[in-house]
Image (cartoon, rainbow, N blue to C red; front, side):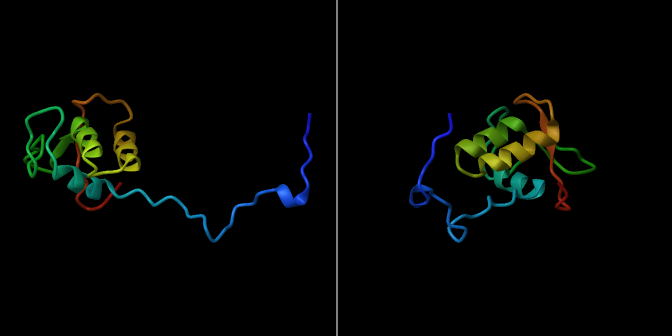
Length: 103
């Protein structure tokens, strides 16, 4: 059954009051933010990576990003962007930084 409402009762959003969601940050920016907190999986302390590659970018456990979300260092959108990089993951999955700002 379709209900009918008079024109005066129809609520329309005000386009000047609506905003788009903020663009997700680059993987490098998210890694830098998570780097400021401890890892939730290993003993990695703030300011040190979870995995040293030696020849390329350092890595961070997904557990660090989860802890960073809980600490307010990154947003939920940031965490989603990180786990999309991995596709399949556990807290021990290592995400490698993209220092060139690549996603």
